[in-house]
Image (cartoon, rainbow, N blue to C red; front, side):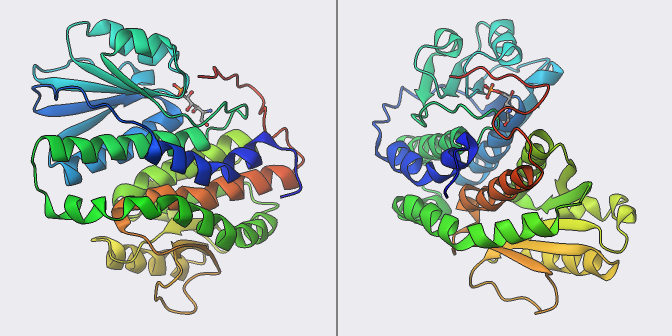
Length: 345
Ligand code: M6R
């Protein structure tokens, strides 16, 4: 690494954050009598909530929704809803407002702090134990949120005897996650440096994801906006076909996340070919053993092979690194971007 940036250090701490999140005691309270979960959060924590929503829908087969706390949502909370509040700091005003607006609804929380306002307002709050995150851009705390959401979903599955076959298979795979994160960091860093160099003069970027990885496209765009001041937009690859693709012209940089084995993989590749055919400079985030046409991607940011449902834990890593190296190449204040302040949990 050879760099004093907090953001880079935080990115490289993620294997140990994962170890801690998987090893920590997870006392599960009695399950609330609910028939839906409403995730509410802001910024990066909202993107963690998007992934959580997918996990509740697929691993637990429980209806799940995501509301933007910064936009004043949820407006209503139907009876038998659990509000799940995610906040690295546990202090974000918009998130605390949601908790206060619905005093009688059951509320759970995840935060990186130990004695936060969120602890006071939610009945069950878990701490990510990611360690202090001094860089404004959230990286390791995002990973911690994802891992605790995953662990709670798996624990809920067992406690409620839901017996979802896909979830049972996934249970046996989570112990490998810290090593997979480490391997991905090792595999992808040089490619991220090269892409950051290639994009040295870029002033716009599109990031595409699909399914559970649409959240990661949005998160990558947020990292690039806040650390590189780059006009970056994250969308679902499918939605991009419905109008936004008109923006593509020769050399337009696009990053697409395509994970083999996912229900959307073939569709995503077809969409990627279309984007490429209009002249995009196309960068793929995909697994090391993925098979695709040799001329599809102009550059590849590899991650280690992983089940699609767990892949957000890895696909975010190259995007964190590209944001970091682009900011570094441009001589920006990586850990303290302009116009932003951060509550530390
Ligand atoms: O402390 P919180 O997680 O509630 O903060 C929410 C957002 O302000 C935060 O995630 C912000 O988007 C970060 N700077 C992202 O890196």
